[in-house]
Image 1 (cartoon, rainbow, N blue to C red):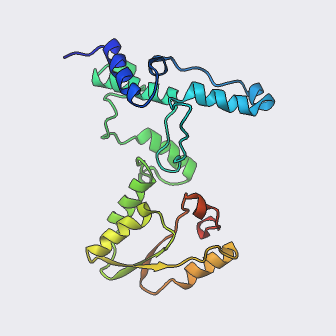
Image 2 (image 1 turned 45 degrees about the vertical axis):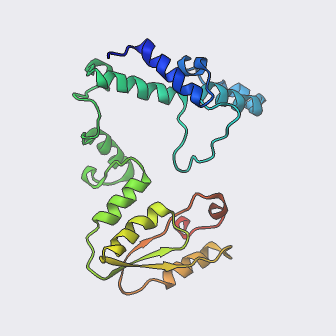
Length: 226
């Protein structure tokens, strides 16, 4: 059955009702950001307007997991939905300039990587664009050529996305993962660095040290920041 825009909005309205969103919220057009003068004069009012006008969340909810998967703002949701509609209909004139095909995951993004490479200071072919840091770490850990018996040093404060790929290779008998305990709370950033450096062994082929975004851990200094 062919579904037009009106029907799509109606179905979205039904879905929104499950999450306590009124129909007017789903179908409303995006609005401009509040003026900077409001932020200077009344910060509380500014942020209340920003939340109410720019996001789809009901006012009774607070989303605190922006370190992982963040709630998209209205303009982002609209652009993504518009792009999906244009690409599903193969309306190439509505897609990005120069795109000969919808971006469904097979593109090399050469122009984007060339620009990013200039900013980072590397060659284009040394740079890959992934969906997120978890995917990037999995690709590196899973694809890095290592001799059998090589050791990977991690800490006991790693995010699961960081230690998971190494633990998988360990389970397959490819590497040995060694975990060093970090002092909590640490006396200084230097102490954390000393703990990690002193744990490095002759067989270590890699060291995975991350900043963990959980509030109780992020409050501590991390050697990755040194």
